[in-house]
Length: 491
Image (cartoon, rainbow, N blue to C red; front, side):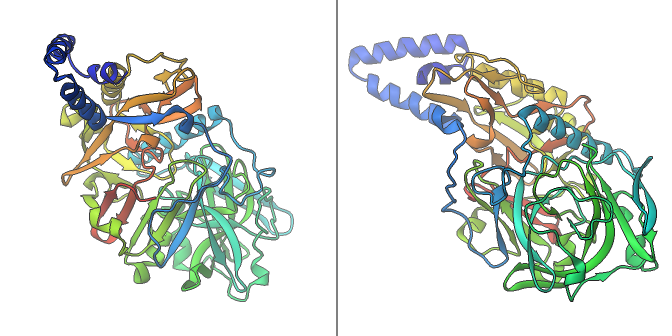
């Protein structure tokens, strides 16, 4: 199996010669040395994966790796066994729904790059007692693919809230009583601003209200002199409510007064049991900018390898051993005026071989790194080349049925061990990022294990480095220095 797998990356003639040489060496008593060389090459360019490890676990196994720093929050998958959410209340989406929502989010990111002004549709809030407010809504990003959650404190006295964190969003929001419109069923007690001694509404006349457009993509409205925000997502979910400020508690020693956030009065859609969203974008209303004096616009995270493990979201510059291995790539200038985090992708290697793609293909599309998109989306030419190289390296395995937008799937049901090619992304600044073995495949079942990459519809659609490919990496956002760093083994 080992020889067959690695040989798939070499020309057939070379394989025949290699095998002939091995036979000669065996006759002379040197076969073991030849096998060791091939095995080393195999390990260097492939991952060894135990098929049983691809199946999800029902037991939470917290990570023993990763930083233990000030300003650090535990990250878990919202639908995994490490989550404290009541799974009876959480309508866990199907695999098909996840990929459909993922496409919607990708389309939003791609649309945003080529549109300076989003708008056209209307999000309406109705209330008999307080009138109505109409807010033009943008195309919307999908909320449902934000699978990673943290717990923070809000208000005085502090109320614990479970929020999805998102590098592709700016405004932090949570559901609030009295839910004048509608509130979905969340696991935490819904925040009631009237029970907090530190909550204040932002007025319509405040300059802060007029600046909401850049953070939400929607022009703010006014209700009884209070500023009203609105956020619409691609799956038609939305949050609409009052713009306010409150005390935010990340840890016992990391407390922020007058934190600006959305206090949702009408929240409807596919949010599950979480209480809202933590915005980590680049706009002035994001958590990153509002805590800049404390953390210097630096945060990092590590997404766990499986839904049954844990990771971290850390604010501020780290001092752990992993920081010494971090290699930084500068922000792409193409996204200098965007809330998204862009990087310049220069090339991709599969099983040690660089894909023969002209640099112009990467620069035409551009690339953003996003914590809320599940898959990695590539320009059609790039994806076709990656798929061809991956299939060639996996040609000794039985293909499975395609699944949704995933067209390269395998049937591992009769296997105990498989060898999958290593995939490495090369970013500007001489930064090579190897995708962990947990980030190469998406598993529906053992007879349908698929390559977790897909192609965009058009050559100029933005490429996206998704959260599946970021698993176990220490990803550091140094916003103040306009760079993103990577290191292996973050959690």
